[in-house]
Image (cartoon, rainbow, N blue to C red; front, side):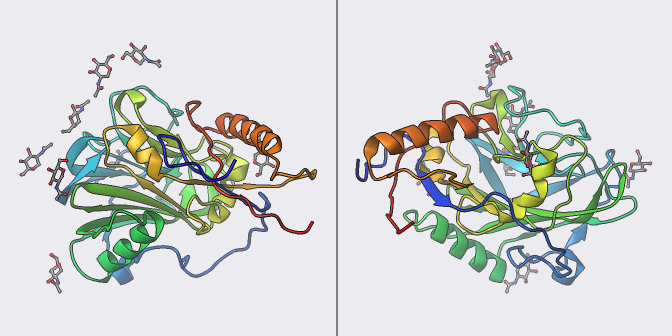
Length: 304
Ligand SMILES: *[C@@H]1O[C@H](CO)[C@@H](O)[C@H](O)[C@H]1NC(C)=O
Ligand SMILES: *[C@@H]1O[C@H](CO)[C@@H](O)[C@H](O)[C@H]1NC(C)=O
Ligand SMILES: *[C@@H]1O[C@H](CO)[C@@H](O)[C@H](O)[C@H]1NC(C)=O
Ligand SMILES: *[C@@H]1O[C@H](CO)[C@@H](O)[C@H](O)[C@H]1NC(C)=O
Ligand SMILES: *[C@@H]1O[C@H](CO)[C@@H](O)[C@H](O)[C@H]1NC(C)=O
Ligand SMILES: *[C@@H]1O[C@H](CO)[C@@H](O)[C@H](O)[C@H]1NC(C)=O
Ligand SMILES: *[C@@H]1O[C@H](CO)[C@@H](O)[C@H](O)[C@H]1NC(C)=O
Ligand SMILES: *[C@@H]1O[C@H](CO)[C@@H](O)[C@H](O)[C@H]1NC(C)=O
């Protein structure tokens, strides 16, 4: 089968790893997080429970799937919206086919009245831009990208509503430069979610949408810190400027962790086709859009 040229298909990078990992408590900030909190000079979100969201007037317009926004709302329940704030704690599963764009690093019912801090900061200069430029050029190598603006919003050790003592840490980073825009979702220690949950993004009429595979399963949430589409455990990266989903999807390489329980020679093309088909069915079951096409990228044969 060999290497196929980049077409309007989603490229697939398959790494064979185990889906389950041991969860240990990290006391320090996860290394993949961008600077956050009072140490970084963040503004603390006034959010108490569902009712409060903070409006942020953006220093640079942010293009999200063809729409240009000047403001965003950091809503306490783990998502960002653009036209108006949202106190929605009841998770609507993507694709909503609604009238709002939404970026949801972890949409669930969050309560920071007892525990945790939500904070944010935007940047138009300095080391955070350098970091964003390096990260995006590493994940999307052919764009010669230079970040001119970054917004970091962090949910630091927040508690799930009605589950006191739970601590969950995650972050969303909006990055733009020129006509290009990207989002990073970073996951630290996340507790099992007993309320409905979902991680990903959705757009007006759901012309583009994405759900991190597994993230609608509350028991899976602690595994987010080991999952990735860019081979950096705990980090998901997406290009989000283009009006056409296909253009963005070309750039969005999805990594999967899977455990293979029987052995077959995947260098034989019929075998890999069967595996890709099965894999697609599984991924769609856990939230990927049904239109996703898996393309074989490379395979390396190792001794069993
Ligand atoms: C946050 O929401 C609560 C509950 O609706 C309200 O009592 C409080 O005044 C709000 N705080 C701010 C700063 O808006
Ligand atoms: C954003 O701000 C710019 C400059 O102030 C303005 O020209 C533009 O119309 C605004 N866009 C939206 C969508 O509000
Ligand atoms: C939200 O804002 C965008 C950009 O300003 C605009 O194109 C869109 O119509 C707005 N949507 C709603 C539902 O107000
Ligand atoms: C999405 O909603 C529109 C109405 O706003 C409806 O006409 C359309 O059939 C819906 N599409 C899907 C896939 O549900
Ligand atoms: C970076 O931007 C901030 C906020 O606009 C400004 O206060 C600061 O002086 C700038 N620093 C440099 C080195 O340009
Ligand atoms: C943005 O895109 C437009 C249309 O594709 C192009 O004309 C313009 O040069 C681009 N601007 C930048 C800063 O890349
Ligand atoms: C979304 O769908 C509705 C109903 O089909 C349509 O009127 C509207 O123009 C669509 N909006 C966008 C941004 O595509
Ligand atoms: C939910 O996630 C857990 C932990 O990863 C897994 O053991 C379980 O099979 C998943 N349940 C479903 C229905 O996918």
